[in-house]
Image 1 (cartoon, helix red, strand yellow):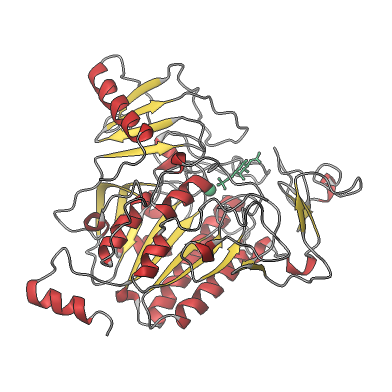
Image 2 (tube, rainbow, N blue to C red):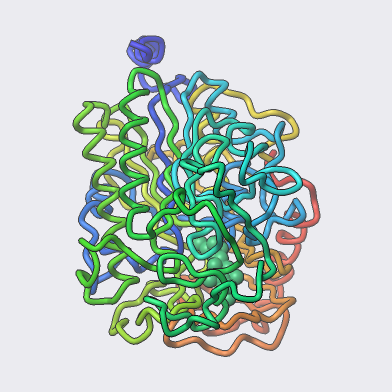
Length: 507
Ligand code: NG6
Ligand code: CA
């Protein structure tokens, strides 16, 4: 019923570009999932039937990108339509970090709310809560409800950062006031057990960092005490997100709704539910891929059961590229075999090589999108302008500063254009990549200082600041051709600078 205006417009003039449509929109964002980690993108060692089905019923993008090679900046730009490097302190958010998307900022959920959507965020947040810090025992404000979401059910930061509790709307769910939650970055008492003092009791050992407060047999980043009844088991997270999403979808099925479904899979510590443990043959990292795939399948089943699949645009993406050892000894390197988490691309999490931000990227809208594989360049930062266009909303003059309207590309229209270029950032060090057509320029002003192991065949970083690669011939960015193409280098440096140094990149 709610689509009657759009339908009439279609019948009258046949799919005009400006017809307003209000399908439900579900953005599924995976965590640390690489381009090569799912079978529809070439993985052989692990099978992802639900994600593959999504791809076969929709568009599988081969040049789909997130904006950054770590979580917080990618999520910031996905939700605001503005690159994270434009705002200070948008790198990996710490446990007690404040809300970094300020109330009043135009966001994807606020745009859709304006269009009449019910909006919810379920899963990993990692964009800070509160101001100047989260009030764990009181109101967690500002938070998602102050930037356009009607409802949220969240993991506040990351599963490896304290505290391991759920946040529902503005509160820690199930918190017993007689057992308050304390979160800090200093050891609260001399005898507080940590991953160092009680290492022999851990069910998953750490390899670097991650040696502070222990919860569920796993030591984490940061310290906390209390909130005992509110704490979750890592094994139950995927079920919790799926159950809450199903409940919320069902409750809102009569309205257009927007669900931001942010799985913590396959971020460390990789602890899938018991039913997935040992099932992939690749160790916990592979088991979490199976669990992620299961979650995608469950959400799609819900759409089918409620008969709303043909009225729902589903997008699948990741928040950054892959990592193997990200601080826990979980056999990700040892059991890797021939599996290539980054597919043909170099680098992964933390880097501006293609592997850092080029990820699985799928759109599906049954009955509306013709199944295809697309090489159009698209980015998660473009959701704001594209869905504003879809739902008849105008972007505010000072909001969504880098979001391009790629609706036609997302929907696979034959005349669609993707982006001409894509800008890639890391966690905010000032390193950037820019891809323009087949060319890729890498600017390294800082060398990566992380103990994380991203792939089995990491190569030494180039010495020069700017290097150039021709992706058609060299998708793995291994042959620097800057010297023989000074004109291209100059052009791309100019283009990169004009995006980075100006205050916006959208028209
Ligand atoms: C790093 C953590 C890493 C991961 C990352 C954030 C250490 C040594 N490493 O600082 O394990 O948590 O932050 O990942 O602590 S992200 O995907 O949420 O950006
Ligand atoms: Ca991540």
